[in-house]
Length: 150
Image (cartoon, rainbow, N blue to C red):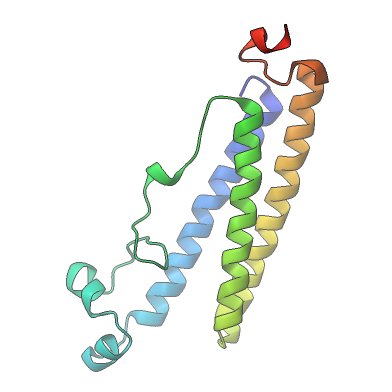
């Protein structure tokens, strides 16, 4: 990011997102740490348990493990900030879906908090995108390839 305000924005949100991962991992650990072998099998956690016992191994609901390969980056400030906006919306939808399925008020309180933070991040990325466009000038949106302006 060429602008200090946007570097700060990415650092702040990135740091908070790591905290979100820790919070969700803590919830999962608290919900699963005392499961009996029968409960593990009945819930369909047996394959997971064989590899990880009750340790938290970040995966998507589909079972795909988290990886940096899921992060999208092009080096184009506009494309990357737009992708950040989309990622925040996808996270919000995930939290919405968890709330549809969960009946645990303690879990729901944390998920509602995390959902609200994703909304705030979306707003901040929107502000960052506006700042980037103002600094670049509307005529040069494709600043990394000036030949587009010819």
